[in-house]
Structure formats: C-alpha cells, structure tokens
Image (cartoon, helix red, strand yellow):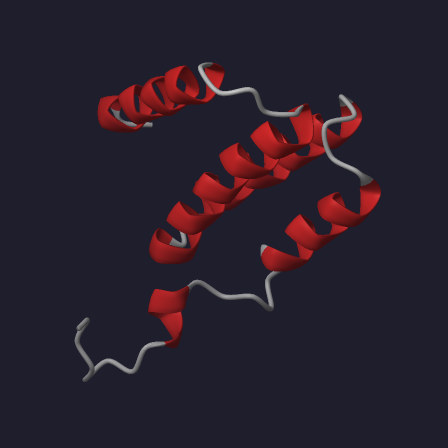
Amino acid sequence: MNPINLQQKRNSAARLSSVDLTPHQAAVIHIGRLLVAYRVNGYPEQRAEIIGMAKMAAALGALDAATHAHLLDLISPDATPANSCRPAGLGVH
C-alpha cells in the first residue's frame, strides 16, 4: 500500500471520529470507500482487503447479515470493475 493511501485513510478516520456515527454507518462508509477504489482500479489485493474488512465488520457486529451479503455480492467475480467493461476505443469523459 502506498503512503498516500495510508494518509488518506488516517484523514478519513479523523473526520469520521468527529461525527457521531453508529458502528454500522462507520463500517459501511469505510468499506464503501474501498469498494469505490476497487471499482475504479480493479486490483485483486483491493478485493481481498474489502472481503477482509466485511468479514471483520460482520464478526464484530457492525454489519448485519443482509448488508454483509450485499457487500459480497458487489465484489463478486461477476461484478467486474468499471474500467474492464469500457471498450478500448472510448476515453473517459
């Protein structure tokens, strides 16, 4: 993991600690941020990190079973990252 990502995680954690969030909301926010990065980049290690975070959050009781299942559906192999679906001739607008 590069240092910029670590600093971004620290900054987002500091912002979230100043707001009163339930454990469920905090877990969804953190995992959602990882999911967005995975959908953009599609790196296998990002997928593994999301799966690990979702399992940990579910084990700690921060995620209910339905939310956990939904997150796993979002990162299933059938749900490919956005950049892998884009035809090679199209640019980003």
